[in-house]
Image 1 (cartoon, rainbow, N blue to C red):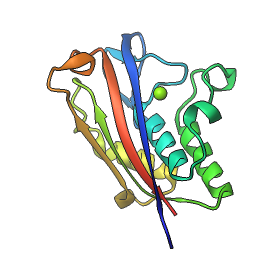
Image 2 (image 1 turned 60 degrees about the vertical axis):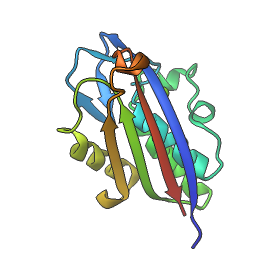
Image 3 (image 1 turned 120 degrees about the horizontal axis):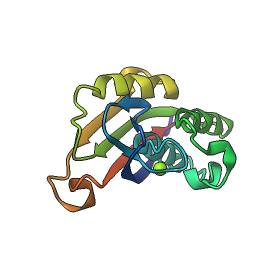
Image 4 (image 1 turned 90 degrees about the vertical axis):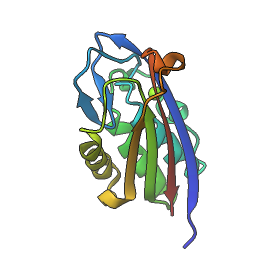
Length: 157
Ligand code: MG
């Protein structure tokens, strides 16, 4: 069976008064991502990676941010709908990998539960879901704590 790979990226500004949601998980912190949905950079980058692997467009095409259906949306819905779109096109996810970049807080205590949450949403075994966290070493907007980013890849088959 042949497989296909896709890439995804997302970033959001971090602002006060918003919950910090990363990889379908609430992380206690005083700021969170600005955005139309919950601003989950990992879910959004993975959605784009999965759509990209099947050449099905991108998150903006399927979940436009001017559509009231997606206002405040739990990004789990994006992943689950993407799985549905993949299946209609004859694909299913095989594995995903992502790196989330933010200066604080440290995500190491949450990584395993984040992987489990993503695996459940993507209907993948835990060993097919990888997530890493890095800081930006104090450099640029991410390093200054103004934003959060995620890069992701996914294979489908
Ligand atoms: Mg986003």
